[in-house]
Length: 514
Image (cartoon, rainbow, N blue to C red; front, side, top):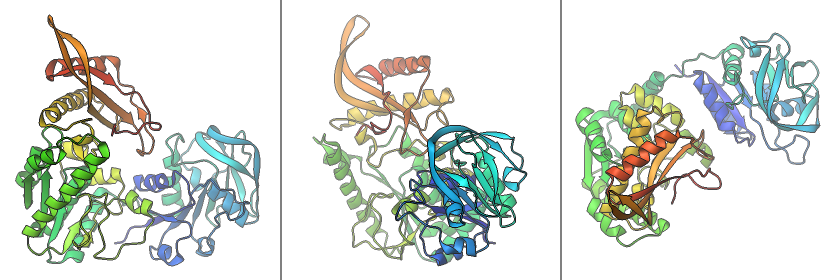
């Protein structure tokens, strides 16, 4: 049975992806499209409702995005958010005008009227506004449904036509009950079934993969990261022994990760796993390289050569599996890709040669990261894999600043393991920190241990909080926790004499050091 679907039309809002995510979080499937996508792409989904996102545009400026005719002609329920509300008003002959006082940030909304959109909500809500225009007069036959201090018409609606507009952003966490509003629209107004669950996703993907692959073989470059691990588990469930997974241990993983990947997928799950220990090849190639971009290029090219070498040992392979997730699809803004095209360079195996052509299997193509994790949990993957900290493609090579040697990598692995162990013990590895890691700096400093002087390297600790990894703030870890981590690293890790904590946000810094 197909999913009930809510379509989100993206008018350029930075939070457009969040709208689709929030709708899915209440159990209703949602897809995001550019506002000017061909009508047939939308109608092929047989949507139950349409949401119009915000935008940095003003409806009265030349060349501003418009409302496609099918949105109103379809007779489907519509919810306009911020610019989407202004666009509905402008199109339906209401009045939109620049506000004398722009409204950016928190505001208090007072709801007016008893409508399905407000079902179960209090009379006042803390909401997040971000607009320079406001509604001066609703369209004919539309009612004002809420107001704030600066927006006398902060929501409008025509319940008979099931068309609503709200000036604030329900998708952001700053809006209390924002998810409830989206749930009311999707379920109460549009009549969607809240059946978008991890179990249903697994059933759908398994059926789809079996139909696509048939009896042919599938190759997966398994990195041990969340996405490739969930792909491996899904494909194993779908096609069993037709899947061949290649895991290349380049010696740049965190402590115990290589063994855990092999144990989980070969021993515990019974995957057909080809494990390649290429540590010496990578260390030899990295010898003397200190420039971060040179490291990345060296690792990427060698990875390609080794993966290609191993793939050709396997005989005929028809399909290549990739861990493409929905944000990748959205950001590329590309139509569905035809078969046998070149592999995107930033996925899984880091880019494959042009002459290696496969049909693609992308079982996570329509999932957000949080959904990938929920599917992983439902498939029975260990928590250590499902909630694994984000990790750069070149591995520890770009957290080991300066020269990459086995001794320095082991030093870094030990320090990073202490950080993660202490964060886990403090209950701060999920939620309080979105990403945390140690970096080893090529900076020596004097220390004192016992009666002697030491001259060891410096470990920098990095922990951030973020919703989207586009921006991030440094995590305010408790001082006693930082003190304990620092003491353990200096005492337990050889040749480290100093530990520092990175308190730089993104921007201006990046999350990684290199």
